[in-house]
Image 1 (cartoon, rainbow, N blue to C red):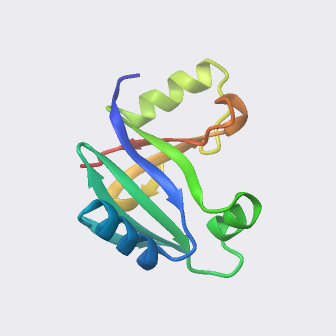
Image 2: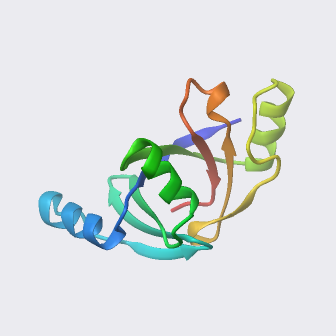
Length: 133
């Protein structure tokens, strides 16, 4: 598996617009994209070649809402851009790594993503992503 870079750091937030304004005003970060993925609203702010991804649930019982209720707002996951996500998943399966996603699924910006289970990654939710720019 070839990891190209840290693609983004996902941050769970209650209000993506409020958080976006905070990072724009406090750090001068531009917004390069906003997108809805099912019940999630995502906002991307680039920092060099890595993005900060603000993630908000748009439903009262959404996955990010539950995460925030349990742990509070903050870092949710780290995403690594890989050259070939299918090959990466096959290699990880062969190593016995616990996967949340057995197959890639659609992600923001027409990417393909898959998550590794935190039980096998020292408690860190790891996302693999192919095609992020």
